[in-house]
Length: 143
Image (spheres, rainbow, N blue to C red):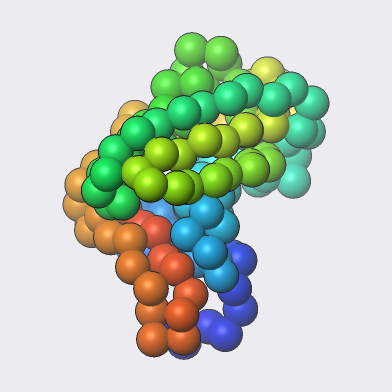
């Protein structure tokens, strides 16, 4: 990864599923961007209005497992609330993630959901700082 931007998300190739990667100046920003990459698998995030906020809390001392828990919590909320999200405010401290996710109920004609994400996996699960000091949070999700 040679990109000099911070605070971005991207997808990466995987033979069977889709990889999500978030990059940020802080760990929290990387987790937030990974969540955006997750939601962008389903629809263009610009189509999702941040009308309702939900709160998510995860605890896990291992940062990689915390990322998987965070993404799986979002997937659970999307499935049970039938919502999509487009904005995130995340804090990560001492193995504890607290977040607000803003979104709205699914509107099929407007959102045009492409796939249903089933879960974050441990495949290519990594959370680390790159050689420029940016945080990277990534994994493969099952679609």
